[in-house]
Image 1 (cartoon, rainbow, N blue to C red):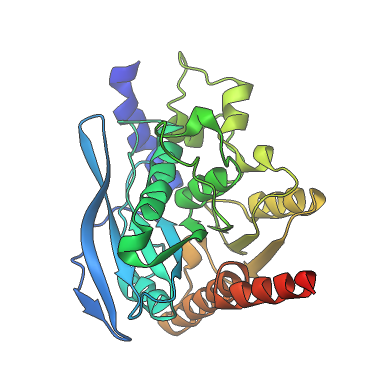
Image 2: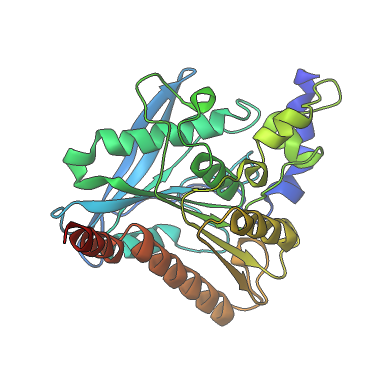
Length: 318
């Protein structure tokens, strides 16, 4: 059965990854407007004989320490790369624009199916979070202000990491912090992994390798919700034919029922990957989504959040 798995995953690919597909990874510019400089293909982990890399987008100033944002790409757990996001034609430029607002931005790759299955992707993401904290002095990162953001399959990975803080079963190594983050953004990611093509791609489940209910729940962010989770932003198009909008609505409801800070933004006339019918609408949708993300980050881990925390601390001392 394992010999057949790559072929079976190809059959699953159109539904799982058609809008987050794996075109060749573009080159990364050394610098971008706003004084942003980049570091290309920095190795953050070596596992199973493979070097995993991330790109860094550094804001023009490193003092005071800056919050950090880790991006996780989509691609149905089968394909994709760290310089793509749905309908964005020049995604590195958008990551650089976020860095220009004062964030250290990292965009990571992770092990893909069928080479590795869940929880390998979560372990890789936790290793990337730990790497950012381990290099906080070098890159001017505030280790207490780290967010994770993912799209499509990457949204599932980001949400699972945010809801598994300190879970020893999914840590990548003994010396790491468990991947705890202070905020999470899930853009149109599957919140519930059910038996079928998605579980085949993510968990390696086929006829003779049935995952079972416990393994499906472990891979489903909606089943991991608990009171006191980090703040969440969820963005989903109302014309998504790949991941049903109901997935994000159920995830939002579960987070709210547990008393967590969550905002759900439903994007009108947007398909999977926030794709739109024409170029003008496409640009507007992506601009608005990035503006919403920036506002969310600013209030949760950005300078506004830090100022509010300092202000509240001052009131308590009085």
